[in-house]
Structure formats: structure tokens, C-alpha cells
Image 1 (cartoon, rainbow, N blue to C red):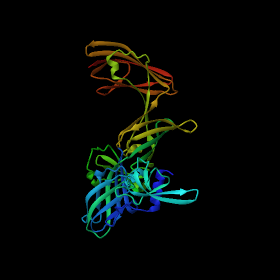
Image 2 (tube, one colour):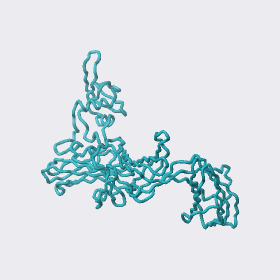
Image 3 (tube, rainbow, N blue to C red):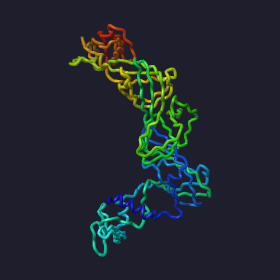
Image 4 (cartoon, rainbow, N blue to C red):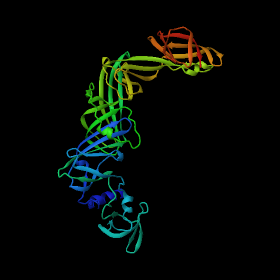
Length: 476
């Protein structure tokens, strides 16, 4: 039998409690919980509000508030009585995390008497002896029994009590003063690490890639070291600034004077909060420790999308000789849509991964690509890269290069687009430029997107080829 089993059986059989648990000490466990709210942030952070009914004796005493998160941030704890705030005051707070284990228990009983229990299989009876623990020796105990030294001893090691300063689970301990004879509704708020959430989206494209259906899921990952039973769950989307020893008062007390808005087909209601957005689950849920939970966030159908084929250049192309031995360039495939009410959406979309699917000719759904999306407000565009085109090919050649001055360059280019599909396509050529630049000549119309970006949109017929040529002068 291993050491862990020995300890578990010891505690279960003996039923002892810590020596420090006296009349003036009150314990509160999760069983006394009347409400729990968990607000989860994107950056592996959670705000827990744990409310319990606790009967406290009048005067000063000690309260052990157990079953808190193992990754609690003790400096963020805030405790108050909801029904009698003026009658209860915390004088001193300690966070006890020296959890008991085999070695810690044994170390506390060095030079003390312990019982050693073994089963005599030959006589089918239990044998108990008493000895002094001389050394624990990192789990290899040494005993003195009847003036003899034993290096280890079979069976159970039975201890007379659980030492005062060891606890079985992380515990908040308060020295308090209480003036009320009634039970307190004590609300304890704190921040904890190791709980976070993210969004995952599934977009199913229609046959001609012009629209589709979107579903969103929330994934909550709880490794905080606590289970939150029947909890009220809220999710905050946005980048919350964190610094060491930050006070949490603003997080605990902040209120958002905004109306909650239900998301279409969702279990969540959404509201603006400070510079973030809160998603409030409209039912309670249990979030177990070491559990990943998925909850439906939204459902939307008939969303109009646009597919783009894009070829990207590089800034360095235009200030030096281009000697790439492999002139072929990848043609990237993007899908974009407007997050608007007119497009069946129009709610803030939290950051996450968007995965695209499409049915093949036999009606079987196939995965076509995925990409990350950022936090996207309503009426903004969502654009994701799906992959690289198979049947559309681009080739780039530098047909001329001149260094006009020490800081002025002129180059001529030919970009060939070939379409092997059974339908025409439009390909965008995106050229990032630098410094002062000017198009000297071009075969196709171009558009200046911003101070340093040029774009050509080129229609390529089915099984066809188009050459785009232009000359550009760049001064840096």
C-alpha cells in the first residue's frame, strides 16, 4: 500500500480534526454556499464572487473560509457582509496554502510518539506497536521501537492528530470582529489565475461561396483549482491591463449602466462594459476544476460573404535586383463578411478561431481552412485567410531595374496570372511600397489603398492567362 493511501485511510478511520479547531474558530466550506458568480477574462483570469451563510459568535474570532481557488491572488480578496455590513469587520487576513502531504505530516511528528499498524497475514490479525519517529528522511522514516532503531516499518503510520499549521486545501483565514447575533450573508470576491475562455466559430459556405451559416461556441478552460457549482457565468471580451498588486476594487464594484441585449439564437446576453463587452449566460452552470466546457454562443444563417484571391509583393522588391529563381508566387484565398444587422449579424464578436467548411458534390461536409479573428465590433469587417489557391497561379518577373540616384530606384515588373478553373476569377495584386513612389506606366488600372500600398484587380477568364505590367519609381 502506498504512502498516499496510508494517509487517506488514516484520516478516514481516525476522524481527527486539526488541533487548532476550537470553539472560537469557525469553518466555512462550499456546502454553505448560497451563490457563486464567475466572470472569466480572455487573459487567463477570473473574478469569483462566493456568497455563503455563516453564523459567527459575537466578538473577535477566527474564520476559515475553505474551498477557494488554488490559484487565488490573495491580495485581491474583498469580503463583506451583505445583510449587516457595519457589524462585521476583517482585522487580519492570511492565505494558508501549506497543504498536507505524507512528508509534511511526518515531518511534524519527528521526536514524537506514533503508532505503527500492520496486518499479520500468518495469524490473520492486526498488530499495533508504538514508536518514536526519529527522522522522516524524505519519506524513508526511521523509528525507535523498544530501544531498537528501525529503518522503515511496514504497514500504516498512525498519527494522533493533524498538526495545527497544516490544512487539506487552500484556505482563507480571517481574524474578525462581529457585533451581530444573526447569520451573515458573507460575499467574498477575489481574482484567480488559470481560468480563461476563447471563442470558436464554424462557418459553412454555400455552393457558390457567396454566403453561408455561422455558429459560435464559447470554450471555458478551468484549471484554477476550484469547482464552481451552479454558477452564474459571465465572459469579458477585451484586453484587460494587468499589473502586479493591482487593486481589484474597480472590478468588484464597477457597474455597467447598459441594457443587456440577447444574441440571436444564443444562450448569452451581451452588453457594453467600460471599453469591453460582457457576455452573460442566461442560465446557471457548473464549472468543474480541470474541465473544458463548451457553450453555444450564437447561430446566424444567410450571411453574405465575398471570396478574394490575393497575391502579395514585398517592399524590398522595388529597391534592388530581383533574382528569385522560383518566380511562382502563392495566390492566397480569403473570405470576408460584414458584421452587420443587414448581414444577419451585428453583435460584437469575441476573438477566436473561425473554421470554414463546405459540402462536396456528395453532400459531405469538408474542412477548407481556419484563421484567427480579432475582437470585432458590430458593423466591422471580418476577414480570414482560408489557404492557398490550387488552380490559380501567379508568376513575378522583374523586367528592368535602374538606380537613378543614390536614393532613387526604378523597376519594371510583369506579373502573370493563369486560371485553370472552369470559371473566371478576379485576382488582387497587392504591392507594398515605401518612401516617395510613382507609377510611371501600367497595363491595367490600379488603386492607391494608402500611402504605401498599391492594388491591381485583374479579371482572368477560365483556362486563361493575363499579364500585368507596370513601371514604378521609388525614392527613399
